[in-house]
Length: 128
Image (cartoon, rainbow, N blue to C red; front, side, top):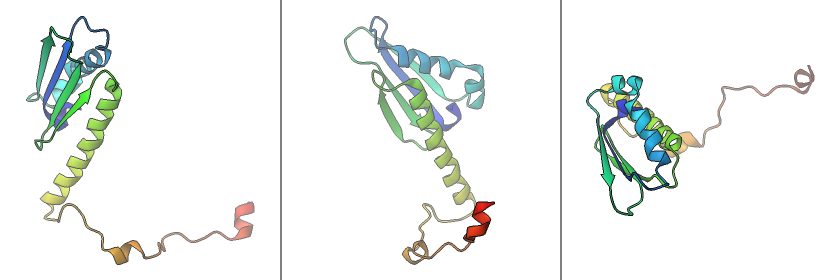
């Protein structure tokens, strides 16, 4: 998960009962496997003393920053979103390294063409 991130910032008040997501996400970030995937990723924890709601801010390796309300977003959902966006980053990088245009723009006329790769099954084949 950390391999797609350059920075993680977790903010919470330790006395706030809504910190479960922050603590779980912090544990995931501190896992050996996660740290080994990107040792240069900064994981910052800010312990607050006010009533500010817990939040998690991640910065992707391409500089895009995203903030999550940790009171209503489970840590697993945040992790899945990071992995999904990371997959897109890897795809984008592969296209750029191959000298291809990104994003890939499919011409409208190609979108309207029928897909001929699948032959329809005959009625007697369906019964077997």
